[in-house]
Length: 371
Ligand SMILES: Cc1cc2nc3c(=O)[nH]c(=O)nc-3n(C[C@H](O)[C@H](O)[C@H](O)COP(=O)(O)O)c2cc1C
View 1 (cartoon, rainbow, N blue to C red):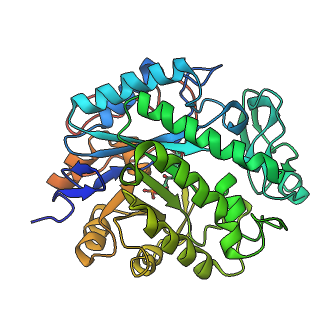
View 2 (view 1 turned 120 degrees about the vertical axis):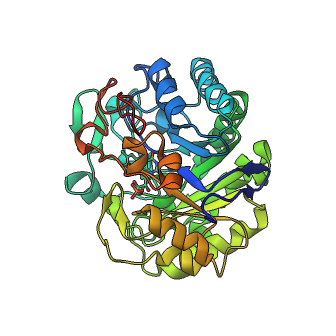
């Protein structure tokens, strides 16, 4: 009897199995406007399963939060309508769907923000000068991020309000819950980690201060959905995208401990063996979930470099309750079914992760079918 295919309750949401579709930016929202269209609906429809959870791709909370050409948003009526068609499709298949809320912070480019300068915790010119850190997806191709500025203390309440408004729109769009993107070097992570946060106000310095923005945003999201339909994604030890912290264990222990107070649907933990969308430590055990299991009291979702066997092993051992798969879901729309039946997985094509249109997006076939 597979534990991976046993039911699990995450906060207010009942799931039939534990194979989760990880948030995957795929750049196929209709531009300009970042509106989810028919192509995105087909893609999510293909990947929905009875009792399965899909976490939607990272979704911008406001025009100035954008940072990725082709990424969708949750700040306009047209976006709400586009997402509603998608959540309806997922629900019709018996699935559940959370929206992942995104502020891209310093990784953005003025070509995708209608000219607004990217913001971060603090200013670090090496981030935009050293092109090995990150490339921003823009209508004019992959470009070095634009020079950023530090958010004024007085502006932070407005950012928190943007997360609240996006949560309201997520609710109107029929999502079952919301996940805060707190990983991979975007705004929330930039505030958390002291390599990028050099502030001297109430949002910088001590671990308590650096976690303040994350906790205020979680409070805002939970005020809309309830804590039991709110979730957080973190990347403890996440070094990708220019991140680094002098004491990641103390930082993320504090975050996990404070999150216990919200009664979250789940805490989503990216293992340090992956960086962004690349595996860097194939043999490394899933250490982050194993450790935070001792700190966080609610459901834990592990992600990063899982295969069917290692996913079964981590839920069996009890270090995680759910496992999110990223790249395997790109190329296997029927992934839960394939894992349950022990069927072979189709390989993904990295070259079409972030291209536009159907090729490499909706043309991966279910097992035994032609696309
Ligand atoms: C094409 C692609 C897009 C991604 N987009 C996001 C995203 O929007 N939000 C996020 O939190 N992580 C994103 N990630 C990271 C994945 O959610 C996941 O953590 C990573 O792929 C490792 O899991 P895997 O080994 O199962 O692929 C992306 C990864 C890939 C491959």
